Length: 219
Image (cartoon, rainbow, N blue to C red):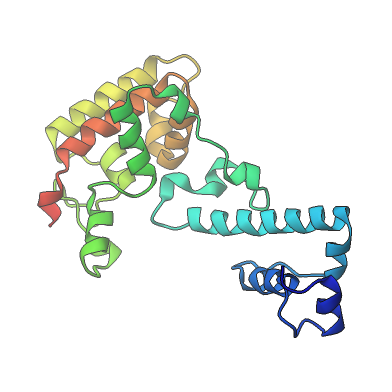
């Protein structure tokens, strides 16, 4: 192993050592971790440094999830703690409750912006301003996830499937009301994902909607 703690200390961090490599990497993180050589000399210090790296990683992931490309994943809306890696990386409940694999994949695609809606597809092909990625079935300026799933009225089949899903929501005990779903769509989607009964129903709805929005229409 190259160098030692003593070498790093003696040469003021200028000599190449494995300790220096750690210090360099930690300083290059998006949320840099302050490196203190004293931490490397005790078990408690090393554990403290590991916790700092975990917090840095949590902040980086939190920033990524806060991107406008992933509105259903917005961590602020889900009560995620930005400095807590376990909170940021918590497994979504729908991964257990949605047992039909095709429906589960569709829901994952929606959450990760790998869907057929114009807001994402036109972003990939060339630079098109967000407000110039119109809905293919109505006059909405942008065909977003929220618009398609809970707002668009320009396609009869889409409206029918939405009504079927909202019908399930309406008869589910302790569920949100239809008015609440439409008034706070992002909160509603997060609620569906955490609900034992509504998560599978919502996943099937997303799966069915994807079929109505072929990629060829926005190519």
